[in-house]
Image 1 (tube, rainbow, N blue to C red):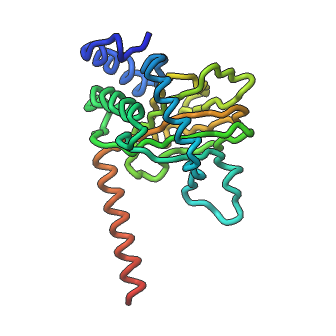
Image 2: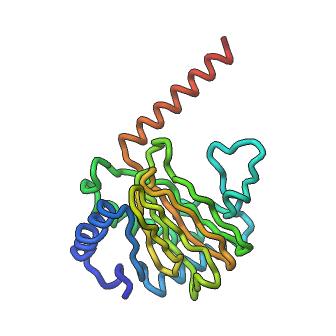
Image 3: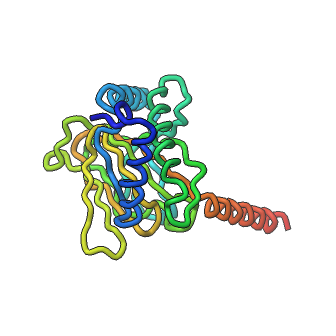
Length: 239
């Protein structure tokens, strides 16, 4: 059942407070199937396929890439950034409004985090040639990212045949969490060092849309560090 078509705002709040928040605080991740429903999910998939077919996707970037490291050995996805307001991205914009609503309902209950803003949406495609993304942390250096939110768009996905599983290694736990990238599945998890994760090699075209929600205080401090380091660099080059 598509949650957003059949649940009132009060039921969405119940979902956020009784399922999402406890899961994040206890396990560090949560996923929900049939998020938008077949019809709307299909519209989002169609727009993502149009973006892919337009040739605008570029290689995902690596933070702190060392010399001699081949990017494709670490990260094999192709990406494009969207705000959801662009022509041809209306369904993506609807998705973002719904994830914003869920996160806003969780706000104030996610530990010390105060969430007031997010990134643009990263539309990602793994081309199905065995590409994946090695074990990493989204936010290892306190850049402000608090919650990672991924919406999957892969119909008839068979993990045994197609691979592409997102494996989470929850900090301090003796288990891993394997999340298959199934159509209309929404996944939330902490972005920091509590959740190292990897995308296992994909052998079919794999689509996802990711946004990051920011902790306001940590984000402000990260921006201040960036401004200070930039000013210091400029000062040293002109002195």
